[in-house]
Amino acid sequence: MAGKRDIHVVPREDGWAVRREGASRDSSHHDTKLDAMDAGRATARRERVELVEHGKDGRIQDSDSYGRDPYPPKDRKH
Image (tube, rainbow, N blue to C red):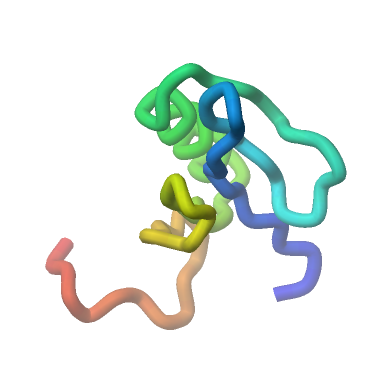
């Protein structure tokens, strides 16, 4: 998907940040991961892209698609 810019929730020394894929700066900073996830989720829904959740170690923990997903997960019933 050309031009797709997923939203990532990533750890920072002073909390958590929401960052658009490929951006040079964070979109927003938050004290808690929950606050960052809420902000990232709102942006991902609005822009119909994927939200990628990272753990404290920086590794990807989970992702949720809020756009048109050609390969929806088979482990969840909607």
